[in-house]
Length: 116
Image (cartoon, rainbow, N blue to C red; front, side, top):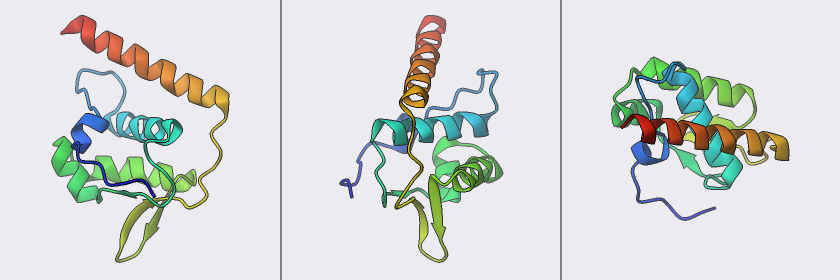
């Protein structure tokens, strides 16, 4: 397991209301990016739905949808009464998927920088 992070989740999972993508999609994509980059390792915990929703100032149902999609894809697992964790054996992320996710993140970052 990787050591606990001290930076807030709002820095790791940026949400931009002006982005045309739904917020749940932005959250899902950010978590996939963290997984693809190795910033989240198997067994790492992720914040509860309520905690992340509070941190990001979004509706808990929005975070729940992103988490459900990641659970369905095998990236996260829910341990009743304990929390949500990165799956012990998450599906392998193909190199092409890693490249696509990183490229998309770079484009999103560049568009935010240009507009601010």
